[in-house]
Length: 133
Image (cartoon, rainbow, N blue to C red):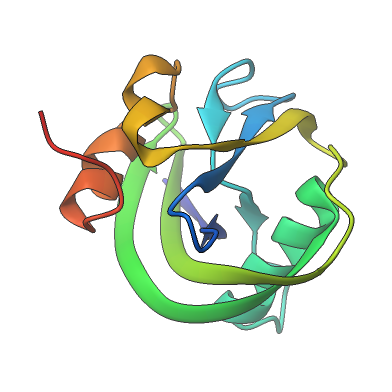
């Protein structure tokens, strides 16, 4: 089984809204997620989270603490090890970039109404970023 390291940025505005990306490509194309993707050789996890955020949203971010690490088994051969970091926007122009069909700020109270990638809402709730029901 092959493990692929991935880093993600949970970008939050001052009002608590989180920047969500509608995935353009597999895995989980068409579902909403936070920006993220594969870590390049020699790249740190926080650097990868910042790069992916910029590539998918056009925003430059300051990456903060790691919020969680989880694994997602995609098929019998691949497991994604996802490292999600808190991030704050510090510049750039919001626009859907590579691997993103759409980007939008979503109030925390509305996260549960979006079709999200597997387990994301549970992780956001556990991190205190989305209300528990």
